[in-house]
Image 1 (spheres, each protein chain N blue to C red):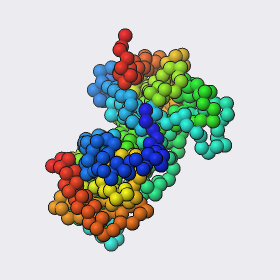
Image 2: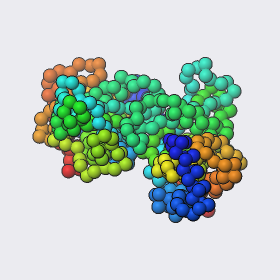
Image 3: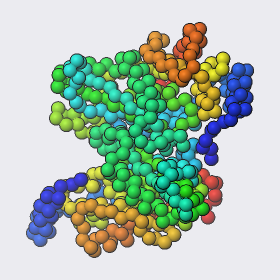
Length: 261
Length: 264
């Protein structure tokens, strides 16, 4: 949430400063101390955290933590939603009331959570084949106990591992990370402070990628960015998501005691 | 990979017979909790938080603090709010949607324990009489339901209150990014223990199997001085006065044990 007005104003200032060399108003160092602009915050992942679920996982990136639980395939209610040709995926993204950066968030669904639930479903569905489970539903519940931006991406990373843990037939995993620009820099995995950067334009681009094809299954953006910067952001994010696939795979192997090659 | 714990009539009978003999499927005594653990500050977004595990049951509670107008009938006192969510993430039986009666009862039982113990000195939450007071909101979220959510939730709530630190407040707005060392004005530590009755047997901390053969339950909330501050009888079957006395005795002795798990 950054005011566009401030951005355009500061952007003009920046132009002036770069030609006249007066104020070096560039984003030259990450606020949380990360050394490189393409560096993600520390990541950890664990599979099998909720014994009652068919599959479950935790994914943490920086201070953002996502839990995901998978229930199903199970009978889908209401019945009119059943598809006799295939099972369906249903995702629900939810922030715990105390997980926001500010005031308490009212529990239950809201417009933001509904939209994120939908794009999460679309991000995950391409790796699944649920034709073996006609009329059934695979439910994915994502809950966030604490957040510092990047929560929908963390949720997708956790959900993808939880689906694998549940033994749902999958073509590959799904990883997600946010890319973007802060002032003149292309950055990966923005935190709240970077999203709220006030001395230059910011763009935040949550991206999800399929492991087996490298295709993009989630792409959103808010902010301002040039075509060239966007292309660069996508390429940089791809490398980060390759690292996330490694973390996810290692966490799954750890639960199932598979020795790493 | 265990999900549903539904048992049939024959299994129920076997379970009741075993309980009558004082035998539990997991080897515990009738008056024995599963392993209890408390982890503090598990959510950095909250002013205070805690994770409680009782066996495989896992519950987290978070405290948020905000500034609001006091109620007209208590202009110099802050207030308390407790909410509980039986997350569908934590059990195949829990569904999305408005709070179920089970969630409402759980929140209200935890709320009553804290409120009636006067655990928080609400007068100390007053910033400016009649205008500004601190509001303490506790949210309980279930992570894995393996039975006995009452005891786990009440313990998580009081542990989260113990963990809470005030955010910085300059008289106009709260800076949730900065927390002081100032703790909540806690005067009492209420701890709840629920005693269950199945057939003629009394026991605590039921597993998911045992929860299916229960006739009645009594949640006993006790303060550290041994006095009671809240009770809740649940389920459909009645209890004799003699049974209630026994349940209260058992509840008090077990609450003393649970209190020891809370950080000084």
